[in-house]
Image (cartoon, rainbow, N blue to C red):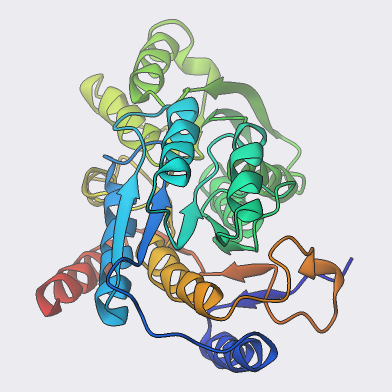
Length: 340
């Protein structure tokens, strides 16, 4: 299988622009934006900082294009409610022009995504993929590489030896890829063992309670905590701080303010920064292009075509944030916010 991946480096941006031109030439003619044109970002937990940042990118791109965009889905983590929100939007009289979908449960979301595509509505998965669905392509982090980067830093912090607890949501394909990256990185240091996987089920209280239990019963048996999603890192850090416990390594995920604060305080060693704003901004632009310049078929598996007019995967990048660069990261975010 030939898989086209576009990293959003300078070269990647040029390739993406060139691909868009080729895509427009290869597909049907364009059309003006209409007042009724609306695009939906569908997620399983709309009220966390990560998806609020993505919603800001979505809104910025929609404003540039002169269209409407909405973020829909449950206020707290609920994959079934996410699917229901997509189907509700799909079955309303005024259907969306396109969907960006973060598939919290890829198998659960598959039928709903396929139904949208069958109705002639383009779907791009964002952040969390549903690879067996008929979505056009995936835009987001190279999650394997993000996990590998985290694993390398974990091994460095543990000096090659220790027991580790991992907080995750095992049904999500993006977190599966991150865990695979961690495991491959740690394969080089066989004295580091992942002794427990904890499914937080989208509820940060599970991370808090589990960490509290570990510190109370087996604090000497656990040396590190890995958090594969955004919510558990700050919970782990809060427990360690409340017990005045030092010497435990925490590697977090994403960059909400509490996580950054714990890095500055030295409780979290590092976090992997994704780019949800970029995912939604670029995803919105590409979705709009798909709507106005539809390929010959929306349900074609373009990944098998070496001359495909669209990519299979757009990598928006990630990076490591630790005490050495956290302040500059915070300042960059403030400068971006003030410029809007």
